Length: 259
Image 1 (cartoon, one colour):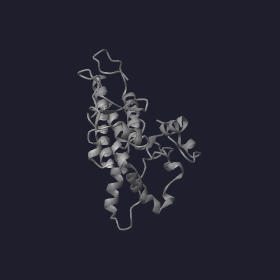
Image 2 (cartoon, rainbow, N blue to C red):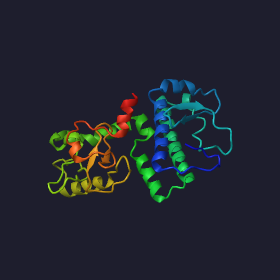
Image 3 (tube, helix red, strand yellow):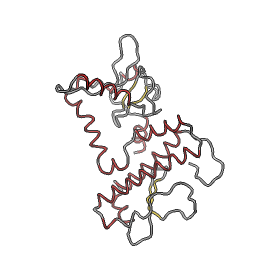
């Protein structure tokens, strides 16, 4: 993606900026998880101010900040190496993760401003970003905990989980409603459950277009990342979904292909 040197900018979409964000995020998560030993060694407190950079191709680098002033794009936190030996390792990694989340948002909305995104494009970009766990949540394990807590209510009644997480279609038409809220416990009041069900339905966003429009349209859930999608956004019809035992969204399918 173009930098910020002040030259002319080619028009970009929210989806393109989101792909840039997602690539940088993947690289930084790799540094703080699978490559953590290498990352730890590179952050030598004896060295000068070091920064953790994530790149759109899902790679990462620990290096000195850019020399040019002002920098081409917003810079990540300086001096992450100085605190390494003065903190518990997990706390230090969590601190780097928090600063990394802040940097990713700064870069994404820097591009949004430079590419002249309007209110709707900015909202769409934010919704797509907000559907992903933060780096902090991934590094600290909060993302897995949230996933388990979200799935827990369904474990008591598996009959409510349709094949391929596809919505059952009303007899009058072939379109499926948005996903229902998880079943309530016996001791919950009907009124509270109704409010929670309505709120969850309203807050469900399509993992592709980032909107919750088309409440009466067909939706399908990815069995890998558990994000919901408009059938039309991922080119899946109700008839086709009935023959899919384990649905993977385009993002999860591409990850498996690269592996």
